[in-house]
Length: 334
Ligand code: TXA
Ligand code: MG
Image (cartoon, rainbow, N blue to C red; front, side, top):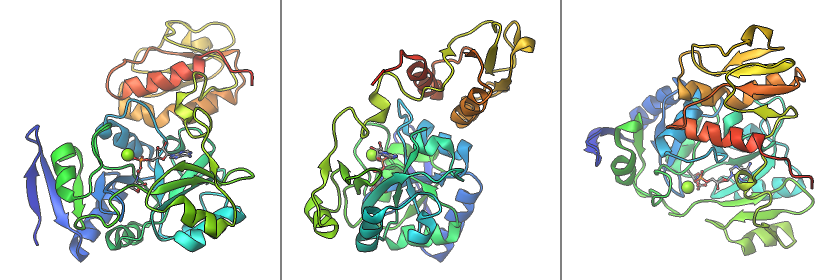
């Protein structure tokens, strides 16, 4: 099989290469250079980026057209690499031992400081990790040498892709490279289990059944409580820093820090107790990559409030504004 081009609906051409030695090497180079590679796992095709590269991870959200920054699964080549990213309790160790490599994603507390882009975990403090077992995914992870963030390689709301052609048709030239490892083996997404508290919680049913997991744990899984941990992005107040956020600010008031955007500084910017600009070039991808990190840094200065300059509500700006609006929403007291 040689490399071929497939036209998507919009006429954009996707480059598809077979997952042979040459294809794997090229895909690894693209990943390390900050590009996006769709690749076969045993569940569905993933839309992969270097999980330590904020701008590359931001592009995943852009290409999927996700309305919000859902946290992403980080793909690793085994438990050793996973332990550098998350804290594995006894349950998590048991599950990884029994089901990795394979279609199980384990949510564990994140190790701080983390090499991962803050966009990967959407500010949750936990990280979802999976060691896939497909030959293509394993070869790619080994060659790339970095953890790979990857949601399913489909536009938001569309069917999950289980063949390279599905990805090419849906996402086309928006992806730098599609690594064709043939049809996926499992065909549905991984099971997601959170091991971040006293009891393991089933967050998403998938390639491994609850019963199989319960046998290994020697205990029943707790069901995810709708609106709780499993749906972090749905809470009205979320992603909230200690300091109040004041959005769409055209001026900086006394005692405030400034989170700027674009080339123009708001009135009084010189008086800000601290100031960072999400993107001087008004590049929404750059702004999204910087968002959580900059909010953390400004919050650490303990300002009276963080004044946030207006950010356009288009493209990635929608997701940025969604996060900021949740951060600014009245805090829940319980
Ligand atoms: O099989 C799979 O899991 C595929 C392949 C590519 O590995 N990936 C996949 O990713 O299905 P995605 O993004 O479509 O679904 C990931 C799910 C989302 O529902 C997200 O909310 C959840 O994982 N998730 C990620 N990190 C989480 C976290 N820290 N806590 C709770 N849920 C998390
Ligand atoms: Mg999906």
